[in-house]
Length: 323
Ligand code: NAD
Ligand code: UDP
Image (cartoon, rainbow, N blue to C red; front, side, top):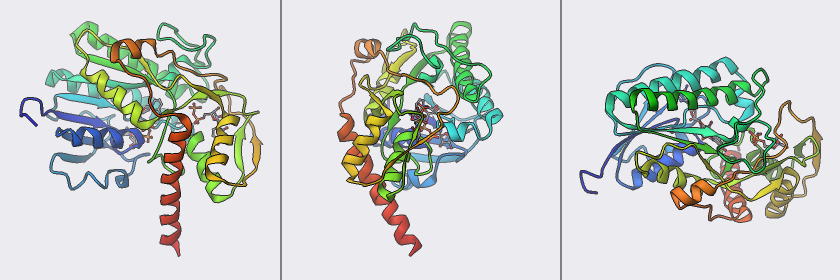
């Protein structure tokens, strides 16, 4: 790669599900990648193929603490994303979003670097507008079990836009909708990994509530492509931009796809719906189509097949490690 186009890029939360794929793509492009993570939900294993790459560096660091490094671009993905994990220590989750955002923004200011925030569809809460365009301001409960994540991410967006207005910082905000794929942790707790692991182990498939709530699932490779396109946009593009797959399905339909792909004979069990669980979610991706010239390319069944193949392999490895 030409020296001028080779950048120093920091990925905060780079040992997690999305972060590890992003580190991989950026390293493959020839950039110097600094992965910063406190491993609260991430894993060193996710970076196995990268640790021997000369351009790749791993740093154990918590983004709630300030950091001084030399960088051209920062992707801020550091935050647990699964409800069971972000609700385990909710005060820490809020601190991660808010202090983490401040520390990433200050670092970007000192380096005159671009900084991208991995925001979320959760900023729309349990939405009354469907599908959700970026102009929709959302319906978030400020005092519920999900609030540490939702309000933390909303405040992080506020900080990004205030640093942009007050300090002229080059910011990029993407609102990520449900994304799935290889390297989700088997105990992650989110629906796709839960259902696949249960089906492969022949355990009951847990449907929360009646399973009629909807989500729109994006395959990880598509998502990472959109994030990287966003970072490359001109300085006038700040976002927020929704990125996700606009094809919507009920959780019950997802369970059926998982059963078909795995060929499992697991049965469905109904568990109580968690409080404030959004009933419907689907991105309006008009802006992403226009500005990023992007839309998802991997169909749901195809993505689930790839993800099942991944879990099949790692569960077999774990089984053989035990025996
Ligand atoms: P993940 O939990 O697998 O990854 C998060 C990573 O951040 C982990 O490696 C974790 O150890 C690290 N981390 C957490 N707190 C930290 C801290 N204080 N300091 C340093 N590192 C810390 O989750 P993911 O699915 O990869 O999500 C990545 C980002 O994308 C998150 O910010 C999440 O909110 C956002 N997002 C993801 C989705 C999705 O469907 N995957 C949807 C919306 C938003
Ligand atoms: N869900 C489910 N069974 C599970 C895990 C989740 O029915 O084992 C449901 C959950 O109630 C929600 C949807 O699947 O309606 C997506 O949940 P997830 O935790 O993956 O993400 P989020 O709610 O943050 O979109």
